[in-house]
Length: 114
Length: 113
Image (cartoon, rainbow over all chains, first blue to last red; front, side, top):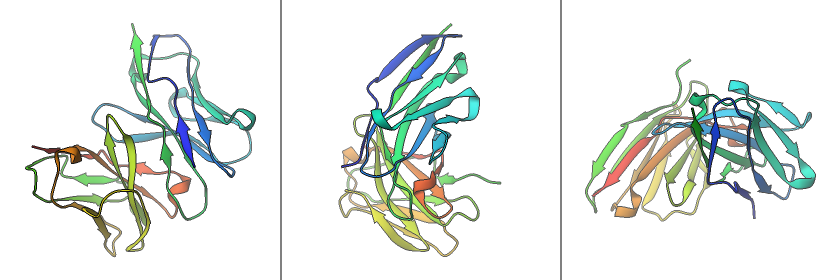
């Protein structure tokens, strides 16, 4: 069965420090992978997506993610975190094509210390 | 370009009542999906509509239903509300296939008392 695991429920980093949020997926075929961010009481905003090609993907707000097929991972990174990055981050997997839906991980809540 | 619009933003209903939530997708998007978000279960897929037809369905009881109109606007309905239906209901639209990514609305916060 398809699934997404985000092992870290809550992460706290200092402002200016680097960030890596982990995501592991289980999917039988070539996955389409996504990272979304959600601020409190709001909907989800797409940060970046991977369909094929270069395994290092650049997104908005200075985020990047790397697809590692051998590890079934799609970790999100940012070199220097800003206080405004505090939010909840969701990894999702889809299968491409016209059918199906995205499957989301449970999310990682990011807190940023001044 | 207007985003995905969900109305109302907040709703308080009594157990046993029914509720209808509305979603207007981005212009040109034909696929509309609905998710329920709760702290315990996370984001759970309800259903997806494409060209007025339900194309995909999650694992929710029949009390949860939806429809899509010819202008791609969508509604979801929950009948006989239970306390456990309290959640943030998110609508997401995509051009043709959800698998290429969604644009989400801000959600409707439903509280059942």
